[in-house]
Image (cartoon, rainbow over all chains, first blue to last red; front, side, top):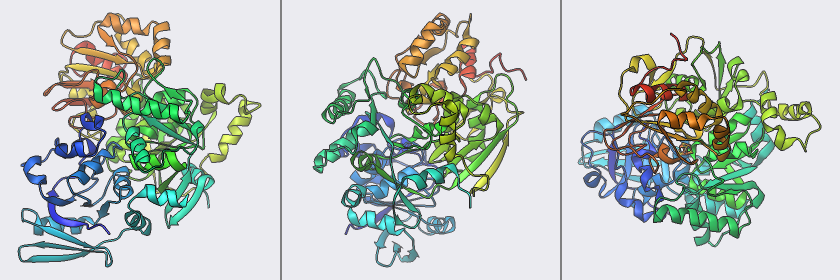
Length: 174
Length: 428
Ligand code: SF4
């Protein structure tokens, strides 16, 4: 079973779109690895520096409607090649969310108040997060602070994560 | 209990419910282009599953960058081309016969009422204009669609938008959909289906319906959809006349998918467009819309008319009406990209291309081109483009560029003036 956790990157903005996650000009790349240097290159966010801020991070926590815009699966791939396989947000664009689970990664929604709470308590601090898939629990830590936050994913999404993605799941079933 | 058109389509295509609320449905068509399909093809090869579920249900086109602009885009085209010939995919449109996917596939009669369609492209929602459930998907969904002919979706909760009133002169489908997105917001229909209904939609041509459905994704919707009617039958008649004795018979068959009067909607929105004026976007999100007159005077460097939103013959006719006998500003680069070869030759026969060229426009071959900032008119940093496309995201048409979305009439008037302005067709 994959491990979903590690250091957290906070992106304090709603409606971060797929062109910001990975600009269209890199869609000519055929290997996922080639996308690695360009993740979030065009993100509109004050004092965000892709080169410094992404390094070493494994989880993104953000606001509403993350991944809106194009259908490009290059967006989750660009995350994956940067070792980020979990995004937590208030909500996601449908295609982006589906693409994450289809790749065996996770896009988990939490209510706005909880996201807001996490931002207030942890953003700006060195924060790490662990996922307990048995108990449906995130454990978030920074310095002496610890929070346990429960989440929900559907049985179907869980089976995609277990199967390692939708191709494997569908080919064995349909 | 009544059902919506999307629910009826799901019911008639259901394969499995792997968990509550998840419907795996059978696909009638899988569309492919050269940007998102090579990833799926390569992955299928790597997994030892280089197969297709049904070569007659797969349609492919090279449209995003054509002719290829460099070695990488040439390779994307080659991967698609080789795959198509390996699997005997007959409906493949390569250079000389190719056009923007969401314009060319309907034009070939590949979309029918009640169909289920996926494509690795977010604007696949366009095809809902025909009363089909058509959704943009990522590469993995596309891959499974190619391999197994199925795709999984949540239950299609539907927002119905009743569009009422009478459009004023010089106001078009593009203004209608921009007003709806402005009202819903970019996240207003996420994961839902938008059903466009009401007298304004009933009176719309198929092309105008495509313009509306095309931008449903800009409010986050999975699909935009219009219930099929006689307009739909008329448009499709040349392709379906072998299957039905009369148009009436075709209509009755398609009408089975019509939403029931007692269907349950997630939301029903009344949208009166009687007082609507031409709109334009002002920021980096398609829901940031304002009347053109409030943006009057903003200088533009480039005007782009084309794309799956507004590159069809009706759009070109409207723009040509504005451009006829005029010259575009010396400070503006005008680019026209007719969406398909058929649109191109119709425009040529009707003298539309000459009007554009006499006005100072460059006419390109049918392609997505500048719409996604990959070729044929990429913006430089700090430049501004008036565009009939559907997305104004930061960097969309080139890093550091600004895109203002508008109708073809407004774009043509803007090209003449050199700054954002209303067309003479619209009188306040
Ligand atoms: S014209 Fe633009 S929006 Fe339409 S399919 Fe091509 S790139 Fe996408």
